[in-house]
Length: 415
Image (cartoon, rainbow, N blue to C red; front, side):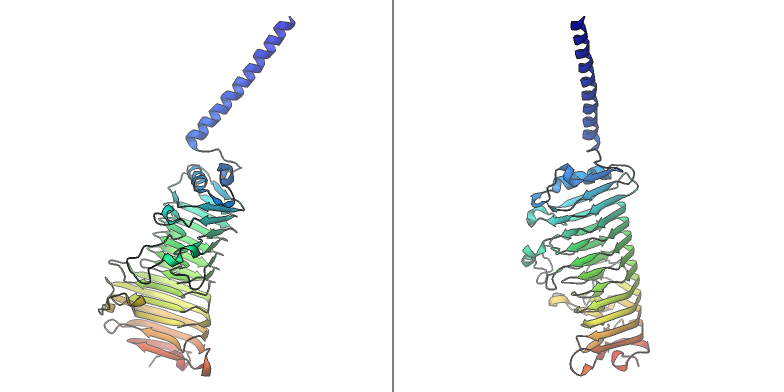
């Protein structure tokens, strides 16, 4: 009897173990089919639980891309967690569309870009065809560009090899980038292409003032883009608004060092689209080499129009060329300069309440085309003083008629 009880107990234990094993096997099969199970409530995918090491030297590319694949394939509102620590990666390709209602990348640590350029076909972090994306947190996207900036030959050669941009959004709608820092990119810090409804808020973008082609935020062929309460100091344009950009709102931005807040350059490539409905308000430019700039190539490849551009409540703090329209833009003397500036039309531009100091005597430079003069340029309450000796500023204008009210005589070329 006792022996029978022992046997029955053994059989019962074996049955329990078998059931548990079967359940575990089923769970593993599900993970294998659907990706790793969420490591937290609401579908959270922590990259360290997928093998990422926060030591700054271990390649974490596979773990981060596994987290993306699992989150993008999940329903609801999944979150990818990048915790505190340093995570080194090569190229990260995050491609949608995703299954859920929205996807969040919570960045609390630091993503570091590898300096092995062989790991990049083009960009570093490229997010494509995703709707309702959020990247939030207090962490850094660090391009570690210092190690490769000397390999940038773009200032000497139009057909140069482009180094990786740090964060690229392609064909993304309803995206929010908030709270993070993007630093020391190898090339552009952020590039927005063919997106609708992108908000960049409370972001810090920084690189040394002499770092080549490190634009802060560039956009092109995109609409309804807002850049709010963001600080940018880089080696090129703080913000560059490229062809095809419409309904752009820039507010509360501090720029410097850098080349200013620019529209353009326009006309470099064939069949570029118009730029329209651009508003820049309540911004500060500190020590930038340019201020508010519209630039188009002298040898523009095809016609386009830049119009409905409004600047208001801008403070200049020792910035060079605070207000500049340049329809004969020819960087580093690389363009052919064949007098095709008449292909780009600049019209309906308003400068209102632009104040502060200029590091150059020329506070206003409106250099427009003789064949297609700038139209509808209005200036009101523009008061900028040269910060050098004698504090005398001047306006240099060609082929433009300006309507001016409340503007210091030295700051306008109105008749």
